[in-house]
Amino acid sequence: MKVKIKKQNKTKEFKLISSWEEVNLDTWLKLIDFHSSTKSKEAEETIAALSNIPKDLINQLELKDVAIIMSKISELQAGQNSSLKRIIEIDGNRYGFHPNLDEITLGEYADIETFIKNNIEKNLPELMAILYRPIVEEKNKVYTIKAYDGNISIRAEEMKKMSAEQVQSALVFFWGFVSVLLLTLESFLTTQQKETNKQ
Image (cartoon, rainbow, N blue to C red; front, side, top):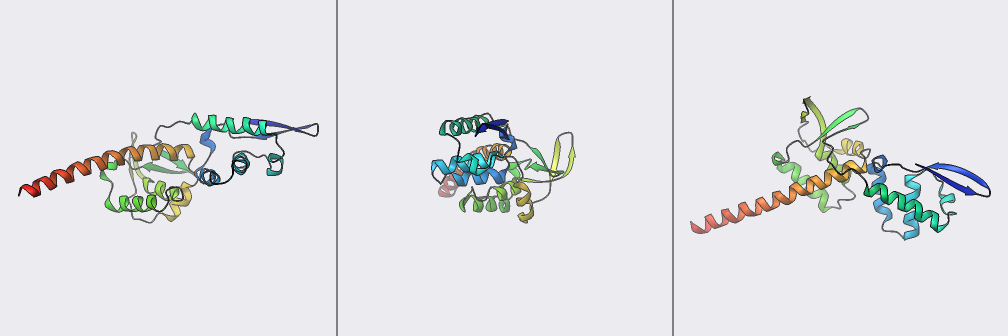
C-alpha cells in the first residue's frame, strides 16, 4: 500500500504493508513490545515497523494522518486469514504443523508448557519451532514431520520469518486443542479417582 506525504510543497511516496501476511513473527514481537509504551511511542514505532517512512518524518505527521495510518493497519490485522496453514515454507524449507496433536509427546508438551509459563510472547519462535517441524515425507497432502528431539534453537530463529498471520492461526488452533485435551484429561482423572475410591 502506498502512502503519500506532503511536506514543504514536496510529495513523497512511501510503502505501508498491504496485508497482515507481510508482517513476520519477529516484527510482530516488536509490535507486542510497543504496547507497553505510551500511545504516541506505540504509534511511532508501529508505523516505523510496518512502513518505510523515516522516524523523523513520522514525528512530523499531523495526528489525523497518524490516526488514518493506524486505522488502516488495524483494518489489515482485523481482515487477516485465520485458517491454519498446515504447511509453510521459509527460505525454501518446508515445515509441517504437528499432523496429529493427539499424539503429542510428553517432552513436546512439557517444553510448550515451560515456554508458555516463562512468557509466551517472548517464546513464540520456540513454540512455533515445536509445532512446525521439517517435513521428512509428503504425499497427497499427507506428511510426516521430523521427530521431536528438543533441539529447536536454530529452527526458532527460522520461525521468526513466519508471518504473524500464520502464527496467530496456529496459536488459535493449538489453544482449541489444549482446551479439549484438558477437559478430557480432567474427566479421565475424575473417573480414575472414583474407581480407586470404590476399590
